[in-house]
Image (cartoon, rainbow, N blue to C red; front, top):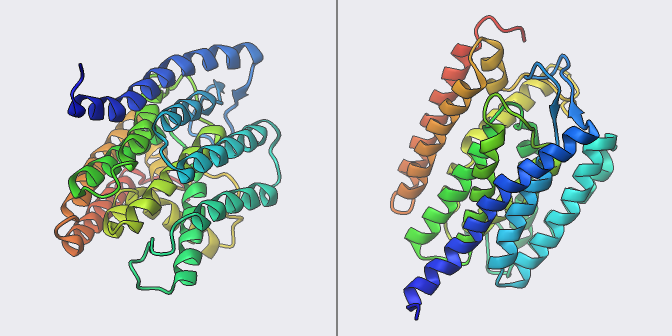
Length: 335
C-alpha cells in the first residue's frame, strides 16, 4: 500500500511525467503530419532560420501541458484556465494558417485574462495591497496580457521557448515548495515545464519543427496565470524575477521600435537574442547563454523568499549582464 507521502509524490509527479512523454511523442506525430501536409515556415528577411521547417509543434506541446493540468486541476480557476487555453490554442492555430487580423486576436487574449482575473478572490492582491483592488486588477490584466504576447514575440530561435518554459515552470514549483504557499500550483507548473522540456528534443538546434503561435500564446497564458497566482500569495518578487529576461528583452526591443516609429506589431529580427545570432553565434550558443541566465534567475527567485530586495537587485544585474553579452555578440549586425 502506498504511503501518504508516496501518494503526494505521485499526484505531483504523474502530471509532469505524462506531459513530458506526451510532448516528446506528440511532437513527433505532429511533425510527420505537418510534413505530409507541407505546413512549413519558409525563410524570409525576418527569419532566423535558413530552410523551410514545419511550424505547429504547439499542437502537441500545448496539448501535453493541458493534459498535465487536467490531471492536476483541483479548482474552478484551473479548469477555466484549461478551457481558455484551448480557445487560445484554436485561435492561434487559425492565425498560424490564415494570418488573422490583430484586433480579434488581442481581444480574445484580453477576454481570457479578464475572466481568470475576475475569478481570483478579492483578497488575492497581486501587488500586496499597494494598489486598491480595481487598480491591482487593471495593472495585472495589462501585465498578463503583455506577457501572453511577448511570449509569442520571443519565440524566434531554436530552443528558446522550451528553455524559458522549463525554467519558469521549475522556478515556480521550487518557490511554492519552499514557501509552503498554495501547493496546488506545483503540479501545474511542473506540467508546463515538462511539456516545454519535451519539445526541446525536436526543437534544439538545428530544429526539426517550430512551435508556432499555437504553442507560444497558450503557454504564455498558462505561465502568466501561474505567475499571477504566485504573486497573489505573497511572492511578487519571485513572480517578477523568474521571467525577467523575457520581460526585459521584449520590452526594451518594443520600446526602441516604437521610438523609431516602426510598426511594433510586425515581425522583425531586432530582439537581443536574434541580433546575437545574426552577429555569428549559433542558435545553440545563444540558447545556452539564456539557459545560464535563467538558472541564475531561479536561484534569485528562491533567495527572494527571505531577501526580496537583494534578490531583485541580483536578478536585474543578471539580466543586464546577459543582455550585454548578447549585445556584444551582435556587433556588426545591421539595426
